[in-house]
Structures are given as C-alpha cells and as structure tokens.
Length: 114
Image (cartoon, rainbow, N blue to C red; front, side):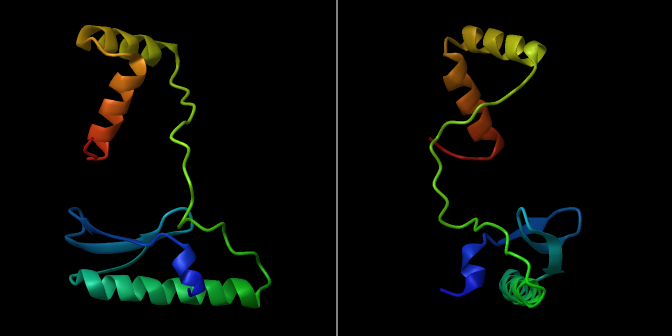
C-alpha cells in the first residue's frame, strides 16, 4: 500500500461552492475542488503524495494514520449540566435511556441507519 493509503481522503459535494471538495480530515483541509468527483479524488491523492514527500524531505514525522483505526464504541462527552439535564428529560419523555436517546440523536445527525 502506498503511504497515502494510510489517510482518509474525503471528496464531498459542497452546496456553498456548487462543486466537489477534497480534504484529508485532521491533516489537510479543503485543498482541491471541481465538477468531477473522480478527478477531484485523483487530485487529492496527488496532493497527499506531495505533502508526504515534503514531510519526508524536511525530516518531519507524518501525522498518525487515519485509515484502519479501531474504535471501541465508547467515548466520554462533556456537555455541561444544562444540556445534560435537557437530554435526560428528552430521554425520559421518549421512554429511552439517556445513552440510547443520545445514540439515536447522534446517528440522525450523521445520517447513519441502525
């Protein structure tokens, strides 16, 4: 696998810009754009290769890989007491546990299905 394969590359439609935009989350922000999704992806790969080459030439360590990372399914979220209270009430109103209610809301916000 090429080194670029270690990094999550995202090409998504931007309503604001009315074109596809490519980025590498956590490393390279929006760095290329165009009307053809596949061409934007290939341009993004070329940009990642260039950045890797620059880092290596400068003797800088590459950022941690973002592909193949394992997730436990648990994380701690600090919301503040007011939001915690409001979420707990909403969960009670729906007859769900706070964990189930928050999981459902988070899934909806990122468009994941059960």
